[in-house]
Length: 404
View 1 (cartoon, rainbow, N blue to C red):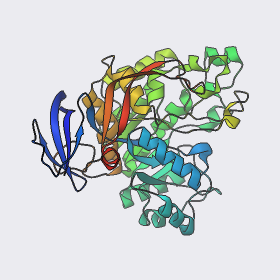
View 2: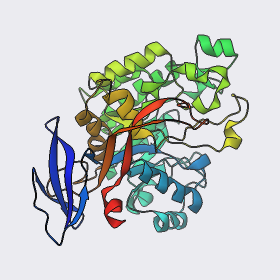
View 3: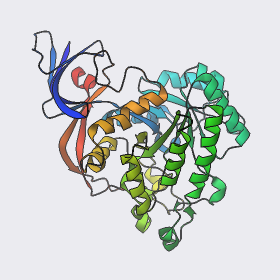
View 4: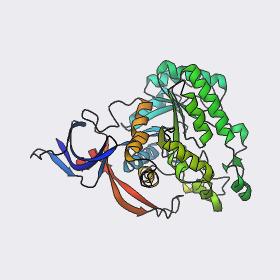
């Protein structure tokens, strides 16, 4: 038996101090006071939150290059950030198109990895979706601007195989290799912009198709409030439509790109301050289902260059929970119970994870300890958060702490 004493958990939106017993990787008992016995391994978690581990549905490997080194590095970063499960976006190279390579990925994966597959092959023909799902893929992923007939077929596979379709909405024809949000700042900097309509128009299209074909659909990393309104209107008629927003679009705005800061170049781009405030209001109004770190790290080789040439991406999975706590919970925008819903419970529902994401007797013990009193200043000069003071730290996963 493993006993966590004096931890703070959230019951009916209120923090409660409890003792928790774990057994066989399950939550065995929760009580205000549990007497320590000689055969118990004990952690004193006084002052710490006991939380379900984070489930991040939008994660990539370094430089979008899949190899053993990059995958191992991702596992370690996820663990440090309290991410117990993550969906590995499939737009990496080499692509998953053959069963032999799929078997290689199976050999390298651990329980935290949820596999996604690209709907299309590199030649833009339909991937072997049914075969790859039968071999363990849990998500179909694609950009919205592919041929509409192919989207129809992808959605039919999604419905037939009962797996969600993750869609990034962007009409590439509406911007010519845009580098940042289209607006006054992009004009001032002389950079090609990415318009909001390139997202909004595609969200409208995909939401109608998802309802028609009954495809469980996650709209990935939405950056405009108009898109969120469209998604929420659509799910009045079809409930299996979900909206994801990155923490960065709730915290930062396009001004982070000033001085040609390539470390703030992410996709979708950071929008203007007015848009950011609208996203915050949508979060308050329960129009956003899940948050993501949008983790897509790029080497300095791809960032220390001209802004237009720099790759999109941010290294952020280790900071994800502290950023959410600092900028959403501490200011009172949301409470911890809602953060748990956005980062654990709703993502678990979307990808069909059972008996996780809740601190409840009989559920899996995919838990982390979080110190809300820790304070540090970001000293990574290659981060758009450089110099910002953040609160909270993931102490570690409960299983790892006991193992150590």
